[in-house]
Amino acid sequence: MQEKYPQLTDRIQSAFIDAILIVILMFVFASILDKFDNVPDWVRIVMFAALFIAYEPLCMTLGFTLGNCLKGIRVRKNLDSTKRINIFQAIIRYPVKMFLGWVSFLTIHTNPKRRAIHDLVSGSVMIKL
Image (cartoon, rainbow, N blue to C red; front, side):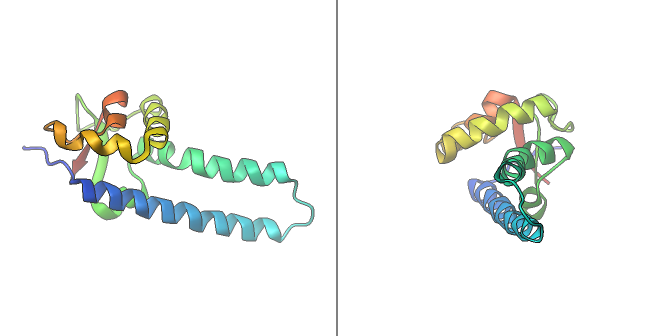
């Protein structure tokens, strides 16, 4: 079977959906914490940091993020696109993606598998279902 790779627009839309979800979850967590008296600031910081830092790597390891699901795309191992990436690949992939931002997507049109810089670094590839 011929692999299909998502367009840049699919990937951007997926990232946008995930960003909206994270913001919504931050508001939900803030509302929940507001119901308690004297919640230490460090608890709020840890909760929000964990949400922001852990969401994508954990979801990628388990299969997909909400944005990936809605756009019909998945992150897989480059050498075997039938297998999900492991937690170590996800932990490498995410900070590179965050650090480079949109610059990471510049390589998508330069290789046949449409791999971004963070995909190249982590050994992953995005496929379209």
